[in-house]
Amino acid sequence: MTALTLDRALDLRGRGAALQVDASAIAANSRLFAERSGGALMAVVKADGFGHGAALVARTALRHGASWLGVTSLDEAVALRLAGIEAPVLSWLNPVASDFRAAVLHHVDVAVPGPAHLAAVAGAARTTGRPARVHLHLDVGLARDGAAPADWARLCHAARRAEREGTVRVVGVMGHLARGDEPGHEANRAARDRFAWGIGVARRHGLRPPLRHLAATAATLTDPLSRHTLCRVGAGLVGIDPSGTTPLRPALTLTAPVVSVRDVVAGTPVGYGHTWATARGTRLALLPLGYADGLPRTASGRAEVLVRGRRCAVVGRISMDQVVVDVGSAPVVAGEIATVFGPGSEGEPTVAEWAGWSGTIEHEIVTGIGARVRR
Ligand SMILES: *Cc1c(COP(=O)(O)O)cnc(C)c1O
Image (cartoon, rainbow, N blue to C red; front, side, top):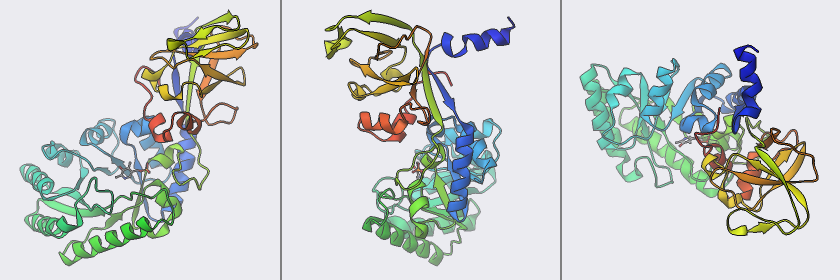
């Protein structure tokens, strides 16, 4: 056997849990959002591309209609640069003491939520001899990141002064919706109005930001008035639609090999705390992944996986490293591959089902897959 064939033979069955990413699904979703954005599309690849691999999602989206990338931290942005990706990148959430010199040197745009950040960014730019490219961030109703409306005029004034000094260029104004996943909600109209007001204030201070961006996935799909010149889309690219309006293609499949099977009699308690016991004689299969690998412990007692084309219950408590599956009378043997979740096309559970079983949203499932799972 050549090393390559041996590696293949050992591949799925010989190792632990594995995560596969369907780049064609990300490509299809990217094309849909590029079309819906009505302007430019920013692929948001924070949190390792929502657990799908930041560089993979970035490259795929850039080939299929996106022209911008967005991440949370400067470290994430620099990692894209070190991976050889040259498209425009915006980083929007950084401590005031961050290394903003790195942003300028790596051509990374940064969002600025207030005068202290602006001063830090301008100061760093001064030492490089090049202006920093900034997007002023207005809080339009989350009370989270971004400048409060009461501080906005002061921020615009300081930004204009820094432009005159040549230390920054204000290329964008951004906001983020609190209730974008509730199309038509009154809070969205209020947020849009506040954003429009913020742009007006910026203009009155002499700023001419060519980029104005408010919409993320849900609003891009449901609210044309929030699209402005650019849409920042993350969840949608990997097949998650918080608005529940548009069929998208999920891109992740999580599999695990059966490590062992055992035949047990009726009344056999299973797992920590004996929270469940067999009602009949059955076969139990052991899978080598648990909550440390991203299966929420709160899905215990509800979750299912696909084994031999059939849905089987995950029984007893989900442990840190392993789960037990009741495969009934199916002649399942060690080494078979179980599908924990996937797009659903073969009957396997979806990420949306796992989110429902554990009382959370799909985002938390896909970003929570542990480092031990092979990509
Ligand atoms: C995560 C994030 C996005 C992307 O949101 P999705 O709903 O995943 O498209 C856009 N903007 C900001 C500020 C974010 O934090």
